[in-house]
Amino acid sequence: AEPEPALPLPPGGMLGTAPVRVRPAAAPARSSDKAWPHGVALSGDASWPAVVLSDYAFDAGAKTVKVYLSLGAALRGPLTDGAVAAEFDADAVRLEVADAASKRRLCFSSFLAHGVDAARCKAKVKAEKGEVVLVLRKADPDDAWARLSRDVNFDAGDQVGAPLPPADEGDGGYQ
Image (cartoon, rainbow, N blue to C red; front, top):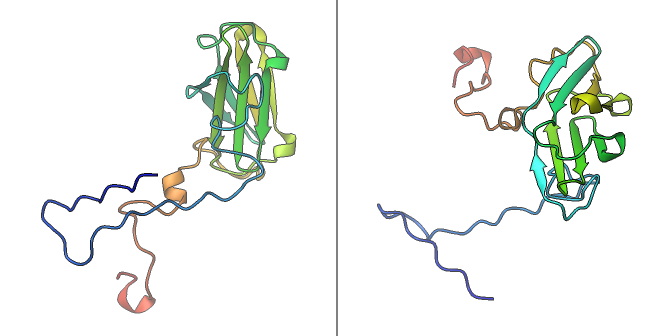
């Protein structure tokens, strides 16, 4: 293996030691690869290219949240129950439709804004409409789902310009 080239210095120079190349940490092993479709196929042939579906609608009811995925334009062959595979976790959903006519996998995934009861979630195929409806059972019926997906930047604590937590009561809560 060739040695890596040296990192360039910033145009204005720098104080201290030379720049250091930082390697990302290895991801922890998980039982399910949620970074899909870059992993094991749920249906169809894993060698088929994955087409990511990002156009959806959702409706939050009292006990369930329904996600509507219209596949009409993306689907080349017939939509059947056997072509659809769904995986539900407490905080994520994955759907894959194997389109044998075009030899593609149509994929949808989302890290959910709230928890769901994965055992009570299901996927309904509406073949005549070319649509799949994901029915997500809320873990807490009192949760108000204003959005389907979790804001990964906010939930990870990486929000820019967010107010700081209060330091103590003596200075009015500001640092």
